[in-house]
Image (cartoon, rainbow, N blue to C red):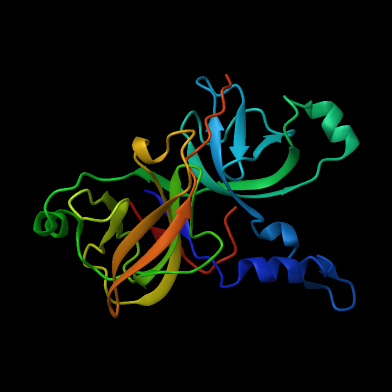
Length: 257
């Protein structure tokens, strides 16, 4: 079962606001949320083949070295993740080591996002039959982005029955006369009555879209929203290959596949 967690609106603004407050209000002993409760980055976690070390790709050109973690908590699988990190102290740098002049960080916590490949493209009728046509909204947010060879989406839909897995599939539409055109399909598995909530999912883009040494490109995403078909465009840069051998703040969990 893949669990996703509700993201509160305006995470970036909230995190900066909380950074100005103490984690404990001494006047009335009321707990104030710490800035470490919120993610301050979206990364790609890339372990080596036997998970003896891993790196975090912050964007298309920046790689972070975690000084306080040697193995990826997600095994040998490359995944997208939300992370909260800070600048390490001198002692932490000396203890953790500095690797290949990479920026070093101290990881407070890290939480994986459901990460999956794109799905096979059939004809439009068969796509809808296989992948579903339930509505979903794509939220314009800092975590909705095409980078590092992935399309990561914050989406919103209706969640009701606990344990029902919503299935999301991203299809590369080579049958459409538009370069790099993708359709997001949502199958709610009959779970269409309940509360509106948000979750995250990441899709690994096909290899030909993630090759090194290519210029920036424009990706078009199509989806069925609650008010009809919508599209959005994303600028993205092909992933740069690097050679090397918790629970988020929220109210309820989401099950997606």
